[in-house]
Length: 327
Length: 157
Image 1 (cartoon, rainbow over the protein chains, first blue to last red):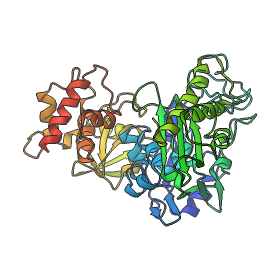
Image 2: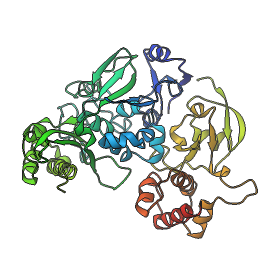
Image 3: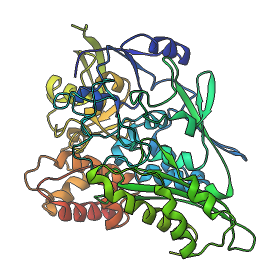
Image 4: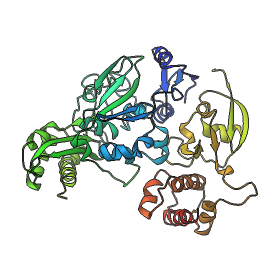
C-alpha cells in the first residue's frame, strides 16, 4: 500500500471540499478502500475520514418508507426489526453479503460504491490492461477466465460484474440516492460501462452519498432476496434476484411485481421485461417460468460465464414462486 | 515520506501511545508496533478473519481498519479475553475441550469471532453458527470441532 496522509473531515462540507482535490479519497468503513489500496488498484495521496461525522448514520422509519443514513453500518440495517418486516429483500441482501465482521464495518454509502470483483481489475501488476482502471488499455477479461463476469449490460470494453447485493434490492424498489446537493433514482445512479467503464456512477468529484430512501409498498413488504453461489456463505453471487410481489384482492392476479438481478450484470439490473410479462396475469408456475426467461433478453456470454444465462431464469422463477407461496 | 501521526490506542483497557505512518493498519499497529502478536495476519485483505478484534465491542477486521480510525475506541484483542487472574474465557475453554484447531493460526480470530457470534445471539443452531462464523476460514478444516465448541460455549455463557 502506497503512503498517504490521513485526516478527519470536520463536517460534510469540509469532506466535500477536500474530496475534490486530485488524489484525495474519502474513507468510512474502509473495507473497499484499503482492500483496493493493498491490491494497487487505488493509490490515494490523501485519505479523508468521514466515519466520525454525526447525523448520517440514522435509520428513520416513517409511514411512507425509510431513510437510511449513508454511514449506517450494514449490520445495523440488516438487523433492524422494522426493516426486516417492511423490506425483507433489503435486509436479506445485507445479511447474505460479506461476513459478520465486514458487515460491522462497511457503511451503506460505501456498499453502493464497492468496485467489481473482476480478478483482472483487481490485479494491476499481472494484468496492466483494464479499461476500467486505465481507459483505453484494453480488457484482460475478454478471452480470459470469465466464470464470474457479466452477461447483461456488457460492452466490447468491459464485462466486469457489479457484485454488490444491497444495490440490487434497492433497484427492485426504486430507491432514491441522496447526494450532497441533489438526489437521484438508483437506476440512474449507476452507469453502464459502454466505452467509459471507468465511470461507474454519476457521482461528481466532491459529491458524497448522504443517504438512501425507500418507499414502503406492498411489493417491498412481500419480498425476497435469493442468492445462489459457489459456496453457501461469504461468497459473491453466481446469480441473485430481488423480487417483490403484490397480488390483487382475488389472491391470484399479479398487481405489482419487481425483479432485479445481481451477479450477472455490469450494474444492478432491473428485469422489467419479466415484470411487464407478469402484471395482470394469474400467478402460476408455468406463467412464472415462461416470464422468467425474459430476464436474460439480450444476454451475451463470453465462454465460462455462459452458465449464467441458464441459471438466471431459474433463480428468478424460484424467487417469485417462493415469495408467491408456490415453492 | 508522509509524516508519522501520534496516536493513543486503548487496547484491552490499557492506553498505548505510538507514532505510525497514516497508512498503518490496526493489525500492523498491534503486531509490529505494540508486539501484541496474538492477532494474526492471514490474507491481509479481509478474506480470512484471522485478524478479528473488537472495536467498541463489535467484531471487525483489523487488516482493513486504519490504526488512526481506531483512536478513541475500546479495542479488545485475544490477549484481553482471559480474566485478570488468567482464567480462560468460556469460548477458549470450549476450543481446548473440543480440540477446535490443528495448526492454530486461525484460532485467535475464530475465538474472537465466536465470542461475538454468541453475544450477537447468532449461535442458536449449528446452521446459524456456520453462517455467522463464515468470515473465519480454517485451512486445516477444523470446522466440525469449531462449531461444536461454539455450541457448547453458547450454552455456557
